Image 1 (tube, helix red, strand yellow):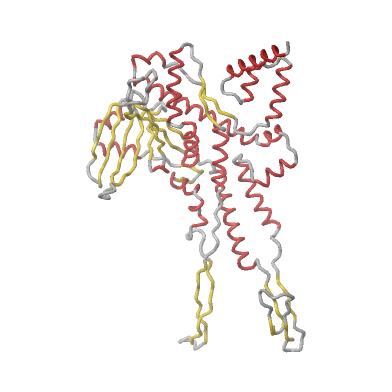
Image 2 (cartoon, rainbow, N blue to C red):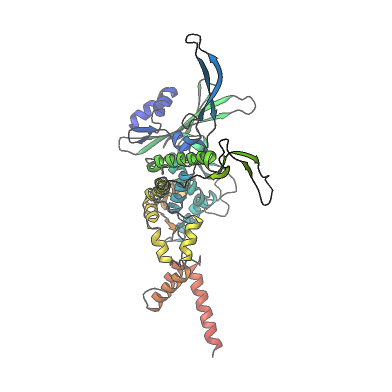
Length: 489
């Protein structure tokens, strides 16, 4: 959509704008099949899986012989047939959750931090403002929520705005400003339908947000459709199907939106395998309900059967009518067919392998640790998930740079005269490694490098990651070394 077309829509009827923008609702293509964001959410939620849907996994139909009757035409005696429906087992598995949670872990790492060293005190103070907004909005934690929603719904967005808070900037270079930045996550899970608008150069130039609200007193429902551009923000609402009521506001001079997206849900490649595994597990449970327990087979007539709590049980059996000897035996089900067992194992393994999801169950990790697997070997075992996470981190890094740019532009708009020259302050974004580190091995390796003069002590302390202020730690080490040397004199 071109800039001229967007302007034409904004100048025209809001209903037309709403209808045109709504056409860009996201559809997820899976080969020849197309699903919606709602379908993806249902795939993620185990309780909405097909195995729980009676229309997909039907109840078991049992044929029951009914009463005898005489056919009025043939005069033959027949038995009526009746059918009864019996509920089947519906065992859902949360494979999609396992895949998403693992992918989020390796993409975001154990933490995300900002780092910056300015050329002057003013740049350092401006970085502190950025960091304050980052920390107060809990962005390190919310980033994981954003990545999770993106993997599930395939898209979501950050909406940045400001509201009044008189004391927020006290004792900072923005003291006196009453505008505090805030961030809201827009996604289907939170009740939002989002519509990004791209121009002919594939740039995000506008954004639509649709949601509903209900008046708790009158129960009147209101449809909201807000439209954002760099220069104009229009908040529209339609009460109970009435006319649009518009509240236009000046924009920030930039689009206050960070749009996160991916083509398909994180688990889309293994969805058929997950469905098959759930059906197999449910069918196995049905089979066990019918045939899993041993059945007593009596030849002849059983005169007495032991009670439940009886010790030294005795079963008395009469012989058969033709003079044969009575006997008692137990029919037990055979073990699972080997091909069926192989399929169960293969389905689980393929889901992990295709999505690069590590199998970190308690039994698996216990076996690895009991074998004395080294830290380096353990990291190599996670090579697949790490490669996938590192690739995804590049995309996330780009989105976080955009987020920082939005924060910078918003802060500069609060005090343009004082902060306009600081737009080139670009903090570094650091992802801390997700995997646990064998500290003993790391300390040994770092110590060897320091002793060989291949690594400075400052870099060594940074690599170990135990100290927040490296310079202060080096000064403390120097003081302790000098004090120890004096005590020996």
